[in-house]
Image 1 (spheres, rainbow, N blue to C red):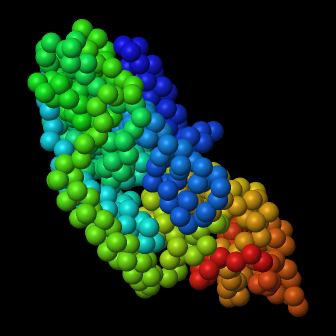
Image 2: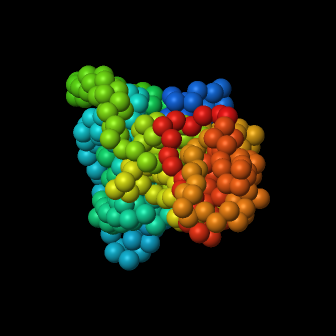
Length: 424
């Protein structure tokens, strides 16, 4: 039992390191597809057997092992743990029991309800995976949120995970019924309190000799610290016994969930009605869909080889293309953003689909055009040619990749947005 902590910590460290590399743009790591919110949304908006199996795997893991996801799979949770290890050395503080606040169920009901209704508008601001991606990619929002939560770690340890995080609330509910739990062997326990002092989630009451497995993140630190081997992990002899308060919170959350789903449906329809002139990466389909499904984790931005993808800003609340950035065009033989996106906001598409999907439309300003012909030779689709001495664009072939604009030395080509991406 004592080795479980060290084994889990090593695995968590490897996963955190790999997650950082993935967000930085080195992306051989597909485990990010197991992140709870992205895979849940991908199941909703782009249903596939793979997405469903991945989501059910996360749920099954919580049912079998408890909240092992929060301590071993969630990169932001792991980041908080390593921060706590540093903070505990600096401050010499000891952990204390934390109250399990029911407000987190309301937060989870609202955020996941609106997500089910069709928009990620709310959950993208509090989802741990999104915060982690935004932080590592140096988004201002991500930096502010991560520093605020890490400050909370300094004073209240894993309070965000146990009482704020919507993902933690859902997994905690499942963990109430998990097959394997942390429990105290009352005959062996001497009530020394070492387990409670070491617990980052404050879920151990050593006086009553009980463990709140809903908030327990299964870090196994208590198993390591106990000198009497009085704590164990496995099939607990004490089963979950719900209290009246639990039923009240559950009923409230269910009512709010229903309202949030309906509210999410209304928000998704009207969220970006006034926004125009936005060019999206291939696979994003249309402005409304992208605005409502992008989690702003910025993984696609970090993995774009031409660096034309930009973060959410005052112009558009999700990732989009700016041909004035980076190499100035969407690389014809590249689908890295599609491969990187874990949430389905940018759909998984093949290279053939990408090369035949119109994401924008090019137009020539005849007053500026010198008829040099560079754009003709550079167009990967052969959509530009000479007709009666003039350079013209064949609208049936143009996919709006921006290569012609990037090649033009005389500012004679503009790229315009379209309402919906279509295969030509």
